[in-house]
Image (cartoon, rainbow, N blue to C red; front, side):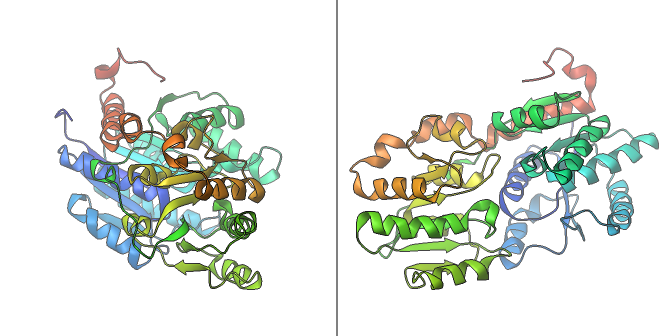
Length: 389
């Protein structure tokens, strides 16, 4: 990454879990190594020991520090106090770039940046949705409100960053054609993530790795697992790895169906450790943007079975036999059974690691994001560059 004017970059997001947190960690490390000063502002009430260990990994790269304030998922009157407190903290850090991730992070970064602008402080304001508000339907009252707020906030946005074509197209369809600068920059994983991870001798047939909430489809995983057993006519084994608000409900679902001894549950852990526990990774999400778990699984040489949602077809291929209809446990079970009963299914179905690496690299992602930062901070340096991509 070429040396340029050092920037002070602050990433704002709500919850330090999942894909957003992975995305920010990669940018923090890459940009810090390139000589820039980086900070994070996020929620203080979410995350646990596992997330704390991930913060410890990147703490050496956070020259602007880690700032945590209470940020609620839903809109509430307490947001006013949070915004004021957040603004004061951001102002003290004197950032050149405020990059908001997810709906709440986007609000905090863009509003705080706009107040700084009013006070004659030059700061670039960027927003990456990571799915978030784009999962809302235009047919619901709450969806109409959220999507109209997204449109309104364009007036306080210097650039929108889309992490896949699906997210860019969904924004145009639900919010409207962007009226500000945009970039399409795919999520990417690092060199160390493109190393095959062998399965342990006591590996299970399938794993689910992720947040335990309905949007991610753990209930579909349980239902499809039972149907896969019936299709194959034999008992199987599986693990659900992760934390979330509905953990107890999924446990009860497994016990009620007599699956409690064949589907285990483990707390969130480092993904490399999780991948050693099975060859077949199931991603049954009802909605996604560009989930890192798919990229990480492919980099580790795992077999992916995933819902046809978000940017997943852009990774696996639009016509991939590994894609299933979202919300359809029968279709999911059919493919799960095929992976166990069809010789060479992985070799014939999964994209080649070198093809994934060529497009979904964290080095490429960080380079292109940094290029956009410099365009916004130094507008004359980017006049010859296209506004959209």
